[in-house]
Length: 116
Image 1: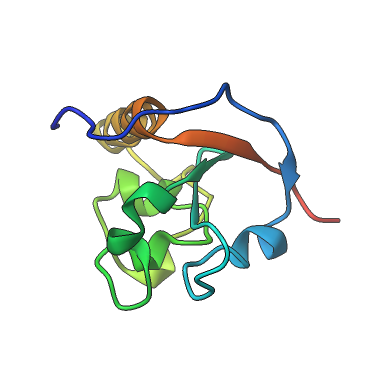
Image 2: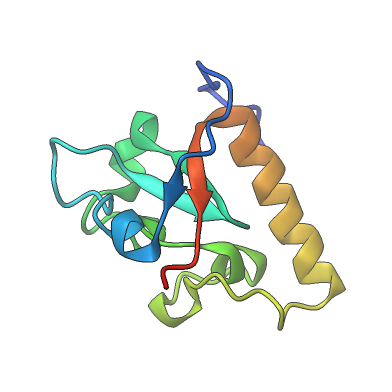
């Protein structure tokens, strides 16, 4: 993977986000940041909004937990889910590589929590 062109500007936060709250940061509202979640970590990907906005290549992950989709290298909406228990060892490595990449590149703004 390429070296990141953006870097985190603040230490990770652990503010809780429900899936419903996360969904509000899907890039459709220009006044809000764009968030993508990987393995429970919510990243602010706004510095690369041009890749995550409506109609853009990675918009399928905006406002969602992208874990399974990233592990499967899939851009299908049905794969943009938090359940990555079906991934095999190779796919888990891919997912972990993405997590490391995002961690080097973007601010972590919170953690995904189960909404009960």
